[in-house]
Length: 562
Image (cartoon, rainbow, N blue to C red; front, side):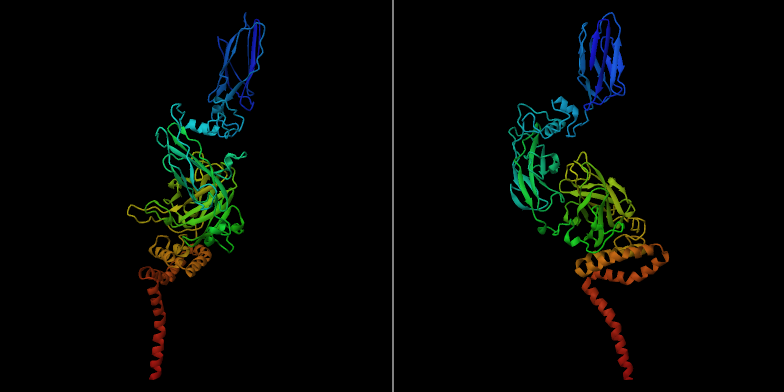
């Protein structure tokens, strides 16, 4: 602020600006001792002039909704000889973060930090906490107690330092929680990074996993699938919190994960070997092999036997596999997860970005169906509200946001790092009687035709994926055909050739009755195999085939004998 005071004439002018030096308009400038008020213009400039028999003196304050100002006021003593000052008012919005270091400007200024310097990883007061950790502790309301010590420094037990061949979903184990005052264990903060936390060039973006949960995972935590990559070196650490604050970080431990050759994805292309599609596949119908594109990954869903895919509108789908829900604990009771759970990893996105992910399903996702997420940290979560479109089709699009559990959603790595990892899938809910809800019929493709339900032709012909005969065919597929190599090959071939046939049948009502009749022998075989077993059914089929031959042969011999 530039101030000029002269005898019998007082003029004050100045600027109100933000931390970047840009003027703030519409700020009310108030002069004490009946000096009146004025308002800043679009450039943040203001001026005030008086003509008195004596020079004005007092102090100036500024105000605007949602802002606070540094300094809060400026004093001007009586000085008939003239006065020149050069300090300006700085306006701050507490929630602003001008240097993008995760700490708001207002808090940095209040704690003698530079709001224009990226200093979140620095420990200015040498208390073992970085500036960002000090701010997080402040947010949690733990201001510390000089008479109470923080918990003892924990130890990183397992994986131990320099351990090799660690699985991709390890359980991290820490030492027992200890506190001199026996205060309650409030939370544990876990971190995994791509480089040493102590390295001079370490930055927050090197962290690939973070969790600071307050109710569970106090002394161990299982890392969700898709976060760790094969053959990589990682560093991990943890700290404990009691009512009065955080302990020091444990000494870091580094470990190396198992090689690709020891995983289900030996060639390292992001798809399990038993779920790969070797032939040309174009699930999104853009004329290009899906597996030659970064934004989509196609594979065989070995839960259903169908081809499936995961596609993103942003970034690269670097990993996908399908997991049978029976391998996961405590699934929502009576829900039918017939597609399994999609474990996927999307990379190369701008940190903090929102992405839309499309899942290509075997079944129509009907109104009333649910979409559930699962990971070992948070268990099962209903994610249906994040569906963007696709209800009533077999292509469902959901939204995800890269970030932690406050700023992001659907991202189980717990940190804003340009990577989204999520395991989730569709589920058909139960009725009060325990039967699976009828999802509302066929229709498989995003255009509304094609039968869905996994048995495309049958679902189209019967008009419902829950028709008794369709259910029998599906159970025959799941429990008989998919249990052997020949059956799986047949199912794979069927799902490659049947969608266009189902589309054609769906457009011609007269064909549906004919198809139902033609399917009757296969339906009968399905019922027989399910209720009597495949061996008895095979014997019955042989008998049915051999009996006419025997009868014909018998009558021919009898005719020649006459």
